[in-house]
Length: 197
Image (cartoon, rainbow, N blue to C red; front, side, top):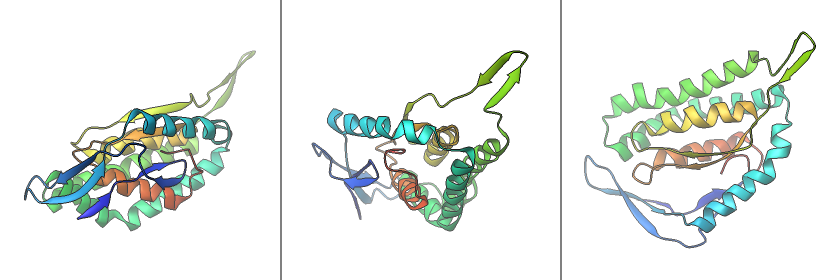
């Protein structure tokens, strides 16, 4: 059984302000596979504050810097692909073949799509006498469901990273293992503290 009772805030794994444990079960076997902590408003406030602090600097990074970070994330995702498939199978009770061929592949696909879009996206252009500049909007809050967990995480997080936004992710408490693993990947890829919480 995994002990996943810490939150990733401001580039560090920290204890919750007010811990409330929840056991995570594999729905196929009803086996308890992990224990997580449920967040409180104080935890959310810490995560949002970290994302706000990180936003000015991260939103000013060059496209090349963000491409490099996202390429590293994709490389790590592929290195840990089988692990992602396994945790999705465990948290959802899905057959490992389905988790491998469909679920985990969605995560890869969304990261890759955002990366490829970033390589050619026109953030600035001139239209007559008008200069149009597309900028990161700010801190994004993402709440994801239990079904297709890494699909929902990656289809929200990857485009936000590509555009220079910072974020707070709240994965489903029913299927949180893929969110924890993705968070390890984000940390391993070297995204600056506070960009992803």
